[in-house]
Length: 173
Image (cartoon, rainbow, N blue to C red; front, side, top):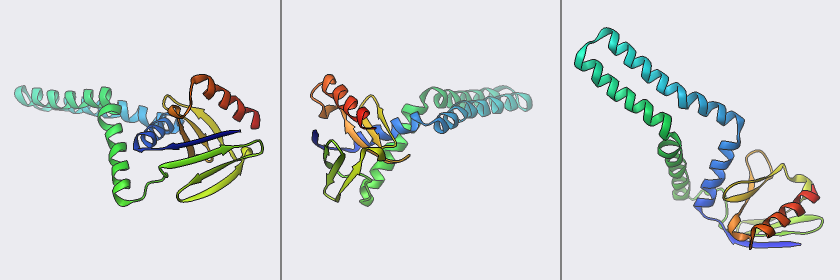
């Protein structure tokens, strides 16, 4: 039996969203199109400016669209994606609609697991897990395609304990 009592914060939720998005094949496909499509459009604008306009206008367009395309291409995650997620989480917090409770108490028994939060309790069998995934910052126990129990790595005493826990979950599926 395993019992964990811990606090979640916005950083944990942000890491879950990043992990979830970058693990999704649909998101990866859309990211590829967005990451390379926007710079390609910028390159077409530069080409168009070079055909119809001369001198200073061409170079101004080349600098503006070239810089924009490069920033988009190489800085998408750091400059666009992460700040957008952070802003969405901040807005959710401001509206009081956070999709997680900060205090989590989860007990994993032989037959099922029990989760207690300030907003309620739930007991589920292990066969209700959609999948178990391990990210750089947490272990995610997916209950559905979009819902997961977030277990930050900091709650485990050691990597060995985390692996033992994952083996325990694997034996229950």
